[in-house]
Image 1 (tube, rainbow, N blue to C red):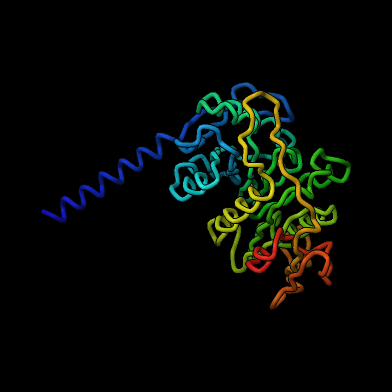
Image 2 (cartoon, rainbow, N blue to C red; image 1 turned 180 degrees about the vertical axis):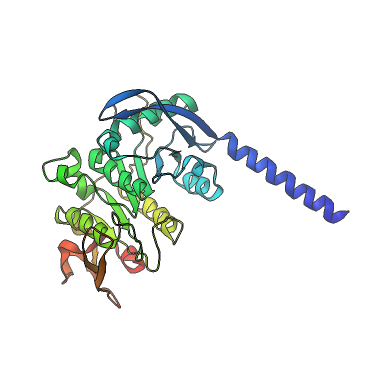
Length: 325
């Protein structure tokens, strides 16, 4: 009987905690845009989690899904809620798979979603919230495109198996081009990813383009993992990156509720960080590649003291993260 009562009590506590978590997750729809134009009858369902005690979120962790994936539920996951509470952020996810023709509408689509989220949750300052973007595959691509188009709104990013499909635009001047060196983010390819679009060589090519523009980013290869974000430790990496990006960029004050009022994010300098060697690859944009260099003990050093090829090295914000790397 005692065990039964204990079990019943634990079950009741579980249900009450689950209901509490779900009561803080809001569902809403936003209109999809293609090349900047709203498309009738194409509503996308979003879910957003806002910690109950957070009346003015400091930012939003945006989970973007790969093709056929569903990331609406991420805000209902307990450890992700703890992640959000630790930063004072909201968590936004959707079941929106992002085809190529939507890439240039990333900025408008996310703003439409934040506008609706502000109305739905009663947190009016969400309309101007800065973003930490992350995702896998197509979601990884989105997490790179948002910083390109919105450097002034981007705290950081974590791109799992993602590449920059806007490279051709970037070379001729995407708005985010001048802001690359103020956004810390990580590229996380899988060593045995057989996807021809985002295998390690393909990710390397995008990463190196960004680094030649002095982007403050790191190439973090995940050994013995494939294409999916649950294959390895991507979310551990994303959590750490978001905390570092918050410390680097966020001023600590909530964004304004006045429309079109961007929160002024803090700046940092490339010279204040560390460089680290990384694995390198040769290959092509089919599912063919080879690792040409795998450092047994990569060189890490302050930017001023690094003796390797800085233009292709990973950039880390401080010695601690360089040593973790």
